[in-house]
Length: 330
Image 1: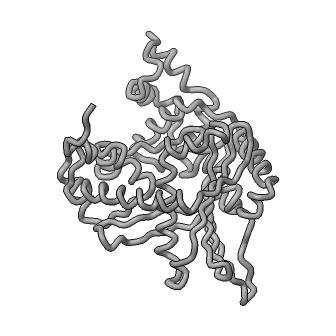
Image 2 (image 1 turned 90 degrees about the vertical axis):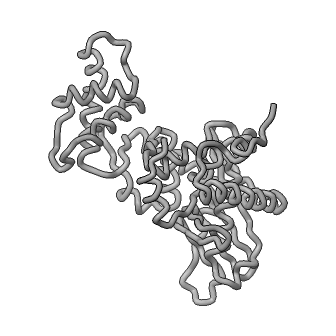
Image 3 (image 1 turned 180 degrees about the vertical axis):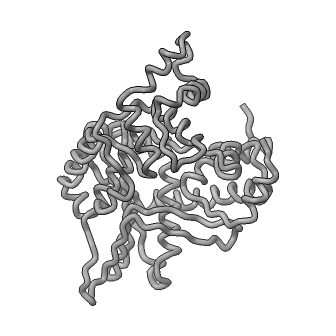
C-alpha cells in the first residue's frame, strides 16, 4: 500500500543500503517498501539469529556482552510465544509503568489472534494457560525493564561451547585472534565489528554495513576481510547457502565498503575475502573466496546497484525490475 506521507519523509533524508536492505529490494521491492519506507519491518528474534549474533559477540567483542544481552535464570518461552509477548509489550501505553503479564488477558488474547496462535482452542482460558507461564512472566518482565536481547543459561552455554570449538581451529585462530600492536612500526591495522558507510558518486544513495573483521597489511599490500557464518547445513553445502542467501552480495558490499574507507594509498591493495563457517555438526572451516569469484561478485554488485537505482530513483516498488519491464517469459 502506497503512503505518500511516509514515502516523502523517507526521500527527504539520506539513505544507505545495507546488504540486508539491498537484498530485500532485489528479492521484493514491495517488501522493501513496507520494511524500509513505511518502516513496518518486523524485528526478527528467532533462536538461530540470536545465537548467531551471540557467537559473533563472544568471539570478536566479548567485553560488550552486557551491553547487548541479559540472561534470565529460567528457560526461554518458544519463539511463537515470544512473538506474542513482544506484541503485548509493544502496545503498553506507559513503558515506565511495569505491568504484570497475568493482568493483561485481553491484550494477550488480541495478540494471539493477530499472531494466529492457539486459535483452535475453543476456550480463552486454555489459550491464556499456554502464554501465562512462569517462564513467560519472567521473559515479559525483562522485556519491560531492559532493551537488551534476552537469553537463558542454556543458550549462553551452547554458544560458548561453539566459540570454544571455533577457537580450537588453528586457521580460524590466526584470523580472528589477530590484533594490531602499539609498536610504532607495525604495518598491520585490525578492525573488529567495524561500522562503515560510503557515498556512491553515481547514485543518490550510499552503502553501509558492519564488518566482522578486516585486516589491513601495509607490508604485503593486502586487505583481508573475514565474515563469520553459522549454518544449519553441513559444510559441503555452504556454496549452495551462499547462493540461497546471496552471501555473495554481502561479500561484495563489504569489499566495496572497506575499499572506500581505507586510506587512498591502500585502495589498490589486494582484497582477500574469507568466510569462517561453523556448521550444524560443529565442523569449522575457512572458505577463501578466489580472486576470480570475488571480481565476478563485484561486477554483479554493480548490476544490483543499477537495479536498486531504478527502483529508488523512479520510486517504483510494485514489481522487480525484470517483471516491471516485461522481460520475464515462460
